[in-house]
Image (cartoon, rainbow, N blue to C red; front, side):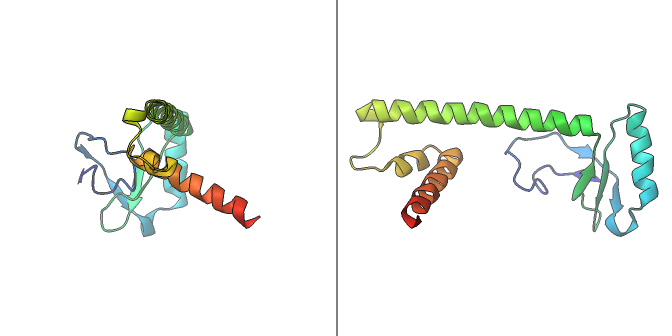
Length: 135
């Protein structure tokens, strides 16, 4: 099966991946033996993931733990980089009146104008402010 990276990404960053082939094990046929076999492959240094799901659609993958750690490090580094860029732009806009947006704009509105990370920050900021009011 050729996997379309945009079809089943469940919220991963919008990065175009090359097409690739996967063999999908039906979820109801995945057994203990499959997992033991994969673990033995990983212990020998192989890294091929085990994809499974329903209707020949990959919905999950079993990967070596070392690969999982690399992915987590990459995601964390990407988040830190995005957060740093967001904070720098927010600071710049706050310090430069002509670049800070419309007069009377709230910090949350300004953050939201900076994209998805800004919208997330604004939502968290509003929730924290609401919690303080509720106390």
